[in-house]
Image (cartoon, rainbow, N blue to C red; front, top):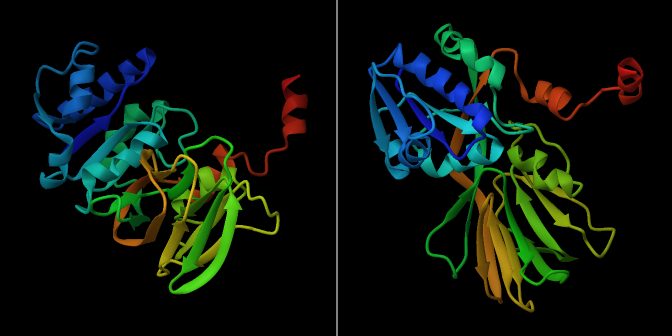
Length: 298
């Protein structure tokens, strides 16, 4: 199995886990394929296995290689950034959580020791996650997002007036701090913080969630995933910020943003006995009796 490693800065106490993982890979392969920026970061911080040669690949070259799986080392934010690395190559991504919540990541620090053995035994499955694409005249080409496309004002405290369209039909004008178009995957991210519903990843839908709407009758709206969405902002004091997951673009108004589901998907790996619903229970603490836990702790 040809494994590529992608990551960003990490805590000093997590370097030992990275060394352990690279050692496991080196026992099975004569090459360690690491994203170049991550390799540069690790170069003077860990001891690399001596029995494997290191191939440091530019991030935009990874999708063109014969790679079976990409390991993402970090939190959910790092995993979201793998979209620009795997692109439409269908290379599956396994998230190894070195962050905090790690809702999308499948493996924790304690699981790294036996990770390769479990994969060799086939103790995993694939999840397909839809991707959003968006375009506007101010940006060249399309931009992509796993979680959400979000519009906010660059002027703190300014309420935006955003005309929303579904297909050719006018939906409404949102007077709010901003507006989110989210995939089912992104329903547990910013949209959830703004009162949006939690949506199972295999649901064929999108969701529009207002951010702090001025009119309390404006609520999140779920629509079919083949819908064409358009946000139109005619004016704002200092322009708007357009967010594609963690990528941010400051843009001037007036502006029209067209959003739809992309043709490509992100393939994530979930280890055995881990599902979307178990993540809700364990990481969002659904069904947990906090009063009983507090009583037991005392």
